Image (tube, rainbow, N blue to C red; front, side, top):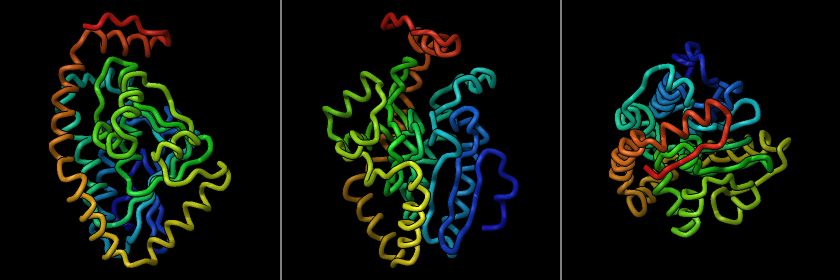
Length: 265
């Protein structure tokens, strides 16, 4: 895995034995995604998939967040207008790669996982969470619809009622409640997250990873065979939401650090 990772500027790629740890590394913006980060993360995942020496992938965040989702300020400054293009080119391939890679992918959720950051965590096969972690389907806070596979993952994990509650209110769910809901596998004290993750990752890497990959393929066939369709439909809906007055107001309120005044149009 030596090739490529030295060029990364927004993620860290560290290999220990058969475990590759990818750390989202924009802590100053809570590891929010810009175009560079999604591109680098996808590149690292593709390389990991091809490398037979990588037997388990861990995704985590630097600082106090896993990922707060899309960097709205960067998006505004970069002039990105098309939501459907952004999802098709950046986020959907990322989610798809994690789900279809026939190697175990473990999320070590060290802090807030919101929006596309929630989608990234839920796309992983297993989730270990710090007691400081929080999970949010926060798209509604800026007048957007769910994307990054979250509409499917939440239905599968917590059912329609809790999925609707998270999507309609956009509140952050604390780690303990996330465990009770089935969003995560384990919650550990914050200072123990790295060691707990290392133990699980090493155990997975030492396991029958070919059988694990086939089990993952079976799960995808049984429960997630429609993920590609869901990702495309989410992109279509987000293109509609992204051109509403509510979204414009939501972004402006976010940038001005005030409560939005939505009008339902």
